[in-house]
Amino acid sequence: MADAESAERSARELGAGTKSSAQLNLKLADDQIAQAKIAVRDGDDERANLELLRATADAELALALAREEDAKASAQGATNASNAAATNTAAANAAANGAQ
View (tube, rainbow, N blue to C red):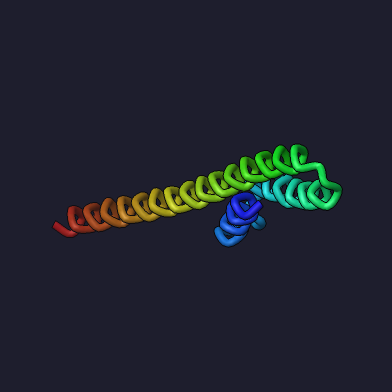
């Protein structure tokens, strides 16, 4: 159970709960951990293990999706900054050429 809870906690700490691409998988992991706890209480260890495997996979997917969303946002920011710098350079060059 510790592996699934650790993966879920990592995903949540990285912001998976606020990233639209990762929210569903994080919710699934939460639900599966809850189901595993019920299965343990009921003495159904096999079902608990299966729920925990699913929870771990969903939490790890949520973590990966959150990281991907962050990387895309960072790349878009870098692209925008680069485009702005190129525009400013072109304007400065045009002004310098017009002044000559």
